[in-house]
Length: 105
Image (cartoon, rainbow, N blue to C red; front, side, top):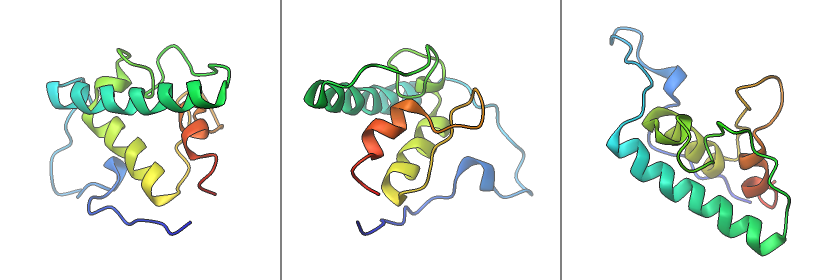
């Protein structure tokens, strides 16, 4: 698979001279998060995979991370670039990311 380089940095790569903003839900984040969750559900239904996402997964509609523009943006960037998107509960890959990225590597 050819990796697609997205035209924005990961949230953690922000310019240190710019004051940091709180990664909190926003209207834009919720709108983008809705589509991210829809992609997950569509793929899950197509493969019959079990739902192994955390209750507060960025790929779960309505979760706080699913409404945060920076988090959802990072998740989409990881999917597009073939980079791993880590679970926020430890040193493992996000289950939502793993299902969507499984054929890309």
